[in-house]
Image (cartoon, rainbow, N blue to C red; front, top):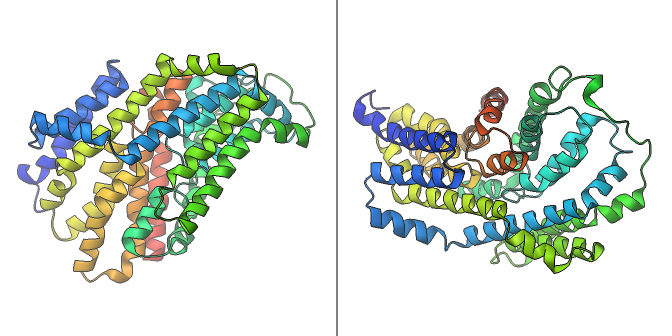
Length: 429
C-alpha cells in the first residue's frame, strides 16, 4: 500500500466495521437475514451512499435473473429434500446404500460430496437431510454433522468445470477451462485431506464407538436405483442440461437446466410417493423456516449489489499501489470479498478484472494463470470461512447448531486450503 496512513487503511476499516455489525447481529440473535441487511446498510452509509440510493440498489438486486434463479433453485431444493425426508424415501435410500457404504465416515461424506458435483447455490441444504439420516445411529453432534456436510459439499469447487466461478474466471482471462482446472485440482485433494484430519479421523469423531447400530451387510441395486431416482434426475439432469445448454443454446442461462432438473426430481418423488399430495406442497410453502431461508438469500443479494454500487472494491484498490496493489488484488481483495459476500462469483466478478488489468499493465501476462490460481484459492478460502456463506448458514439452521461455535471449527482447515493454493502458485509460477 501507499504507506500505512489512516487514509490508506480507511476503506478496509469501513468494510471491517460493516462485517462486525453483521457478526454482532448474528451473535445477538437478531436474525441472519436482518443482520446481513444491517451490515449492508452500514457499509452503504460508510462509503457515501444515500438512503434512497441504498433502497433503490436493494430493490434492483431483487430483479436480477441470478437472484430469481437462486430463489427458484433453493425453493425446489427445500421441496425435494423435505419430500424425500417426510415420505421416508431418504431413509429407504440410506438403508439400501448401507450395504455398499460400510465405513461410517464414508457414509457421512458420500452425499455431501455427491451433491457437490451439482453446482447449485445453497446445495448443502439438499445434502443435510441425508447426512442427518445416515448419522442417526452415530454418536455425532449436530455441530459435527453441520461442518462435515458443509466442508465436503464444496471439495470440488476449485476444479469442477460446471461451477459458475470457474466459468466466469476463464471467460474473464480468455483461457480454456482445462488450462485452469488442470492446475487447481490438487486443491480438492487438500480439502479432502483437511476434512479427514480435522473432522473425521479417529479421536475427532471417535473410533469403534462411532456407530451405535450394526450396518446391514448387503444392498440391492434395484432398490438403490428406485429410491435414488429423484436424486439421479436432479443431479444427472442438471449436469446434462447445463452441458446441452452451453453447447447448443449458449444464449440461454444455464440455471434453467438446474431448475428443470430439480423440478423433475420433485415430480419424480411425488409420483413415487402418491400419499404426499397437494397438502404436503401447501405445508412446505407456508413453513416459516422456508421463508426464513429465502429471506437470507434476499439479504445476501442486496448486500452484494450494495457493495458493488458503493464502489467498495474500487476504493480499496485506489489506495493501493505497486507490489502492494498486486498482493491486494491477488490475495487480500479476493479473500475479503469472498469473506463478506460468501459467494464465489462475487469475488471473481469484483476483483479478477482488477487483477488481470494490473498484470497486463505490469507486463506479466505470462503469469496470469499462477496469479489466477492464487486469487482463486484466496477468494475461495474467504468464501469457506465466511459466516454468511449461504451453505454454512442453511446447514447450521437445519441442524440447529450454534453458528459461531461451528464456524470456529473451519478456521484451521481453511488455513490448509489457503496454504495449498499458495503452494500451487509457487509451483506454477
